[in-house]
Image (cartoon, rainbow, N blue to C red):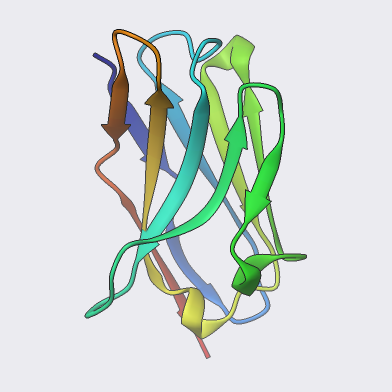
Length: 118
C-alpha cells in the first residue's frame, strides 16, 4: 500500500496561482500513472491532469494551457502548478496513483481544498 498526502491548497483570487504537491510514502518510480482529480460541490470527481511513468501527460480541456503536472521520482512527489485560476476551478483536489501490474494499486489522498474567489 501507499499513503498519498496532498498540500498546497488554499484561497486565491481569480488570475492567481497555486502549486499543489502530493508526497507518496514510498517510491513512485514504478507507478504507471499519477494524477490529479477534482470534485466541486454537487459534481462528480473529474480528471484534471495525469502523468505516466514515461513522462507523458494529459489534461482536461478546461485546464489546458493553465495547469502543468510534473513528477519528481527522487522526492516521491507529483506536482500540479495551477496558473490563471478561475472561480470554476474551485474544488477539492485529490492525488491518485495507479499500478496496473500485480500487485496492482489504486490509491487516493485525502484531498486539498482550492478556493478561487472572483
